[in-house]
Length: 140
Image (cartoon, rainbow, N blue to C red; front, side, top):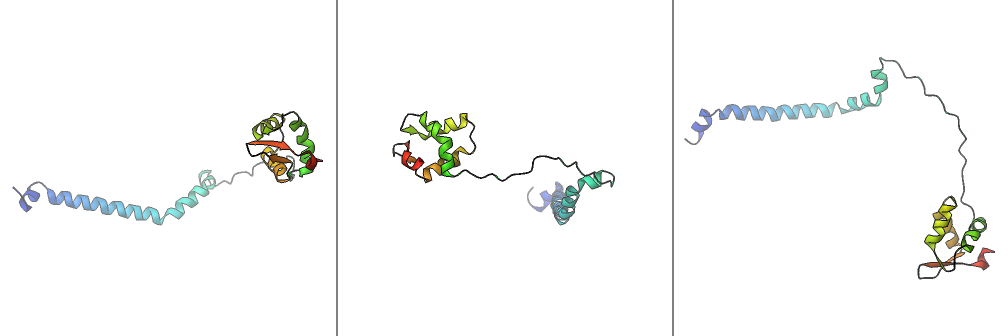
């Protein structure tokens, strides 16, 4: 048995209607959810108000602490006085990694920026083979 008779005898029409109805209902639900997404987001943003019985939360305690102070990177001349003792401990020419490790041991702030500043001021001079030397003339 093939064709329309087979569809009719095995409830094919009913399965087709149920399948189409399921897809249509799913699309209706999806469009409704999308149309109401702004209300869902508002509920999420104000969840403290809605779920505390309408009571507003007490304002959080203000924590007193030290005021923010803007820090600046020292100038190259200031960095020379900090980095000269470190460089004197290294054998010239030295890899930059050794200087960086020394700065981490001494817990100096902003070692990358400080070393870059010294390079831009030609106080730390690259030798071309991955090592650097300290330019004593510029450091004075």
